[in-house]
Image 1 (cartoon, rainbow, N blue to C red):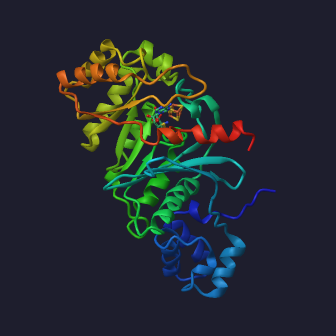
Image 2: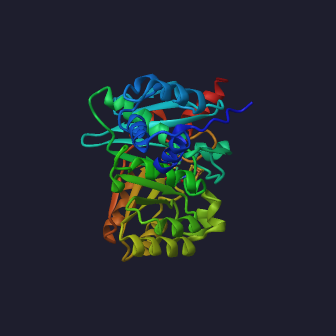
Image 3: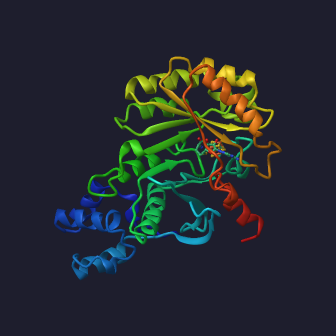
Length: 351
Ligand code: SAH
Ligand code: SF4
C-alpha cells in the first residue's frame, strides 16, 4: 500500500507550522525543521540535534523524508557538467544536471517524468508522459545538487527548469517548488537566477505573469513560422505563434523582465536564412534574447546539428537585425545533457 504519511519536502512553511500546531509543538520548531531541510541539508531526522528526541521520533513515525538516491552518474570530459539519474520513491526516475561554469553553478531540474508535448527532437518527448513530479520531488533535486556542491565548499547559484517535462503543465507543483527555492529562511536562491523554460503553454504564461515573481521566462521557440513549428512541436497547433507572442508580450509588460527564446539549431530545418529572417521580424522591438543551441542528436529523430557554416549564416542574420543572442556550444554534449537522454539510455539497457 502507498505510504500515506506526508512528505516533508511537499510542505511549505505555513503547512509545517500547521502540522506542528496540531501536534501541540511550538511554532518556532517548524522554523527549526525548515532550516534543517533547506539550509543545513539534513537527510535524516537524527541529524536534527536541536529538536527534542521525542519530536524527531514522531517525525520519523508520522512523516516521510525521502532523499532520492543516485542510480547512475555521467560526468562530461571537461568535468564541467555532471548528470545524475535519481530514483524516486515509486521507482520512477528523473535526471538532474549540475553545470559548473566559472562564476556560476547551475542545476537543471526536471518537473515531470516524461512529457506529453511530443516535440520531435526531444528525448523526453519521444518517451511520452508518465507523471507529474510533486513540489517535494522538484525541490529535492535542487537539494541534491546543493549537497554535492557543499561537499566542495561551494553552493548553487542558478536553477533552470529545463530537465524532463513541461513546467507549466505541472504548474502548481513547479511554482510551489520555486517559492521554496527562494524562501529567505530556506535555500534563498535569487529569483532572477531561476529560469523557467516552457514549450509555449499560453494560459500558463499569462498566469505566471501574475505571480509577482522576478524569475526569468524562457520560451522554446525553435521555429518562426507556424508550419515548421507545428511540425517540430505539436503544441504549436494548440497555441500558434501569434497567440504565443501575445502572451510573451503581456508577460514582459507585466514583469518588465527580458524573455529568452531557445532555438535548437537543426541542419537544413530551422537554420535557414528564411527562418532567421522570420525570427528577427517576430522579435523586433521586444525585450528579448535568443539562445542558440546546436541540436543534441537523439535516437528518435533524424535531424543533425547545424554545421558551423549554417550557424555562422544564421548568426549573421541575427547581427544584421541587432537581435541579441548567445550561441551556446554543446556543453555536456558528450554526456547527453540534453533532456531525457540519460533515462532513455538506462531503459534501453534494461536497468
Ligand atoms: N519543456 C520545457 C523545458 C524542458 S526542455 C521546454 O520545452 O522548454 C529544455 C530545453 O531543451 C528546451 O528548450 C528544449 O527545446 C531543449 N531540447 C530538447 N531536446 C533537445 C535536443 N535534442 N537538443 C538540444 N536541446 C533540446
Ligand atoms: Fe517536453 Fe520540452 Fe521536450 Fe518538448 S522539449 S517534449 S516540451 S521536455
